Image (cartoon, rainbow, N blue to C red; front, side):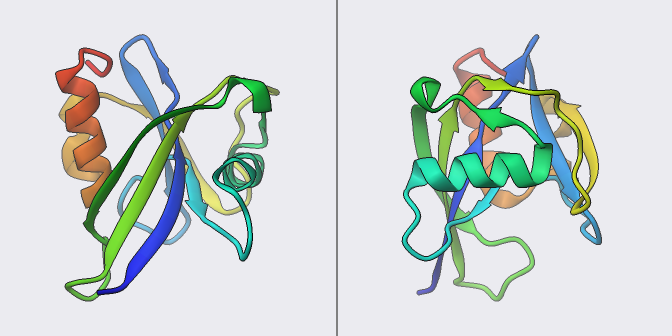
Length: 132
């Protein structure tokens, strides 16, 4: 079984969660991405948020939320994505980078337009009353 190791930022405001649509994709994903060689979770989160959203994560505010596993969207059956999620504060204004087509605030009712692992995260946040 192959596992894709990804890190994600959970940024919620007014019961909505920030999500991104990468260029050429048809599914929304939480901001974040794959770990590079010897990066820590923290380093991956900081780099990916800078690359996708042009924001600077405040290192001392990073808090682990949870780890979720599901079939990887668009990949051969049996390829699993492991998404380790963090919440954090940041500086700067959220803006889409050249690799992002759209940034959008989603609610639980938008669950059908997100990846399988994001669906698990949405359900968890919804059940805890964090996502509306």
